[in-house]
Image 1 (cartoon, rainbow, N blue to C red):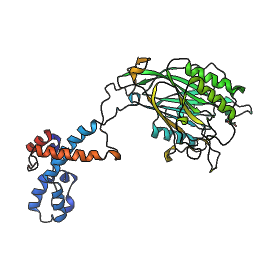
Image 2 (image 1 turned 60 degrees about the vertical axis):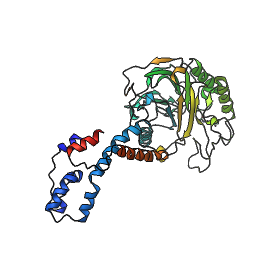
Image 3 (image 1 turned 45 degrees about the vertical axis):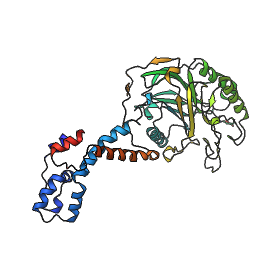
Image 4 (image 1 turned 90 degrees about the vertical axis):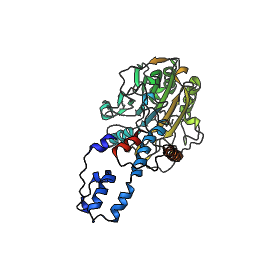
Length: 407
Ligand SMILES: *[C@@H]1O[C@H](CO)[C@@H](O)[C@H](O)[C@H]1NC(C)=O
């Protein structure tokens, strides 16, 4: 309230056009003085004057004070490492050499800010991390392998972990069938209490017949999922389906291997938990220039325990568009169970960026469905004004304004 009056105001009242921004801000003092001297001030100005009568200022002031009180209750913790969910974005980029495509991928990641991203089929033998949002993410890569028909590279995968999530370790992949196609990381997912739990995230690309034996690919993935007793998630282009409604034809072998994997790990395939999905609406891969339905082969599978809830969807907003790939990205939102139910509790490093152990509440503007809060708020302010008997007061002097502010 004090800075309000510390600014010295020199209203220019000679001409109508001489009204300055500051005279709009402090009208109850200045207009009065001006009006008595200056006959040029006519009805538009008196209207503005009316608008800025003392009561108006008073109400705005009190409104401001109360907004913070009501909205704070609704606020969420500010940072990703400490929210109660985390998101995984997975895209088969079908090559990461074209600068236009890279620009699109960067822009999607900047807008969506997933906690984890998995970009598969980078198709290059050079590292691409510094072409991705490297300031926001720790990026792990497996470069592509040379393809039989010279010059080009196949596979290749990159996994990014937002820097507010601690990476405990990167798992060394010894299996030859997984090399160049799989990255596994143990993360520490933070909770509001400033602690965290271990979670293994596996970014995968599963081309058909990898290493000549699809079965060994899926067996090796299952081992990665199960070698520690921690929760896990597997995300990427798995090139596998669970039902005939997900692929137009073929892929039976891949379906068998994948189903066997799901049975042996008791993994939750998130698309399976969405019975209303269709190839028309939810395709993740579709032949170029096709107007028909595609296939649902980009997937997220999570461990049977460790999550209250999880959700998967296709990234199909206009800002999600990435050119020159026949895939669309998927987004999974995972809600882990509370910390006390995790056996692998551990303390988060205290040098993590954005670490905010107190999770300071922030002001949150109500969503449209909560617009009733505005009414609730208005009623409470009206009541308060009545209780304090403010409605008949004028705030003309500094003193009385401060009084109102403090109440
Ligand atoms: C994906 O699976 C289908 C059906 O099994 C197969 O025809 C296709 O070649 C596979 N794609 C890749 C890139 O392996």
